[in-house]
Length: 244
Image 1 (cartoon, rainbow, N blue to C red):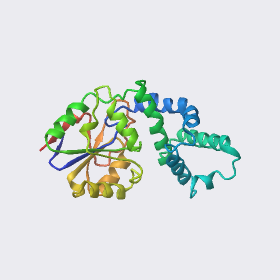
Image 2 (image 1 turned 30 degrees about the vertical axis):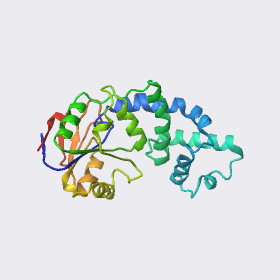
Image 3 (image 1 turned 90 degrees about the vertical axis):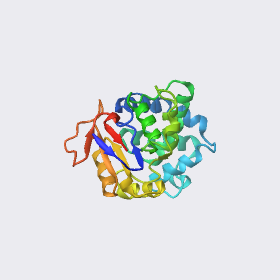
Image 4 (image 1 turned 45 degrees about the vertical axis):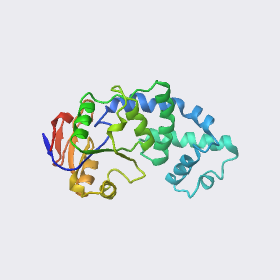
């Protein structure tokens, strides 16, 4: 059990509120299937332009034009973006540009009803309990804020989006860097010790603890084995968190 009397709860998604299998077996394959058709339909639109800037910045360029200046024509640029996104996905790189693009592609799936986010059964009741107890519940995930909102707005337990007061992604900072959690605490407007961060990744929890947050390690079905919890309290369900 974790007894928590602080102000806010900060949650990861994959392996914490939802299964790793859903993300890897459903959401990621959907992006691979729809990547080229989405790029073709959105190419040259204001929606895609900022994402292309992120992709170029992730690759070390100052602008998309600089990154693609050796490519002849729009088709070649599109193909380069597609190849780069595929490379990043193949290597499980959590780049901001990729995450932003994935969010745009997932939107079409959620809007059509093909994608329905599978959250763990204990999550909705816990969110209700925490909100009723006056806790400030927010999400910090490598997936874009837009993707997070779509995810929780279209779950197997209905629309859960109103349960959250804030969302953070890699534009705030890397998830294994303490400064990211300090920035989040500052945005909460409270001391980091007043926030409980829940994740299935020890490296993320280490960074949050370094920033001063309390931590909980989630042992969910399908999660990778944890060889060293490094002192983080483990839970198998959100029912094991007592608030006050």
